[in-house]
Length: 493
Image (cartoon, rainbow, N blue to C red):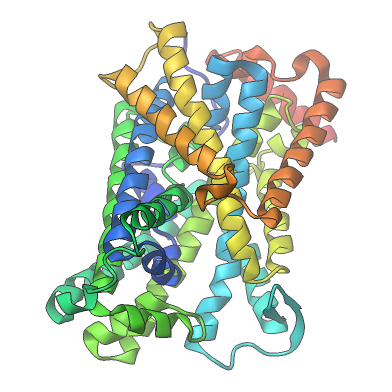
């Protein structure tokens, strides 16, 4: 087959895609949630949980790396699952990963005001209402709205602009994290680890608590698969794309684990508990203050966290909008979302839709964070499971497919990816697992499913044979005609 022509601008180099993936994964959670992880699993338990979650993601990442280089089209999972599992498999997989991306974007939008409440206690002004025990203020909403507009605009004016912003901010995050980790080695104490290496009165409870941390980690590792979503905008050799994807996972696992260890080395369990009860509950920032005996250094770390919010937000807008674009091109959702900006060649309507959803989310306040983490994670893990299955199916179904980055022991890698992602998927469903979704989270999952059904049924009835037409998923020059037709149709609408 000849290479697919694309209407996207190929502007992303190797460094761009590394910082997009790594910046997406490290985000803000390492500042705001480290105390929760330690209280759940203990210092060693939380670190082990992230390593276990990272191992699962590593095997899944190898599957993604091979499939991305074999089918370098924007949409990633959308194309992989179609080739292996057909129309319905593709729809479910892609819609699930979009749900995960949307969850991260909402997570970051709701998390950002927490920083300002910590930095400036008087920031929260003009009380409006309360959701789940969390007070919503006009200043909180105004700041969130401003950021929604700003980040969405940055993405509309071009992927390269977004990548430059990502590079600067990721370097800040990495630098701050390294300073904390290094400082803990000089000013921390092994005595602080006593009583908090693992949490639980018995070995069984310790294992359960460690697994509870491991199960939530995919949400924080989601980001490496932004790379296949923007495959058509990457100018690097295909084999290198696969390697960078895997490298980004390894770096993220190391970063999270070392930050957890640094906090535990600097603060004992009582200190972490007290810090979590303070306004904002930013345990990692308090650990930085202890490491340098300076409140100013806590604010330096918080600035790193602020950068993390923007890097994750930025990356997942890229990923989510490209996935929406791909579904729209295939007439699986309304084609209006396949419209590219005439100047910047970005999926403008898809970006605007994600911006609107994020705006709605911020009205629910900080409580939304707890619901979005697990609900979005469920969508991510479901997509990981389906991509892992697709990896194995395509090795049998299309053994001669060109694979620039080819996994050697594919049976072992594929089976491990399926088993581990499948295990985590089950953990969200079984009530006694300790990780099952709450009613509010199931409501989000079911609501997103209903929206997908509405889009799917509407498009199937209206576009008939165009719905998930095969020509969109095959990398031939004919695809350009399909994209042009969709662009024309979306413009008319």
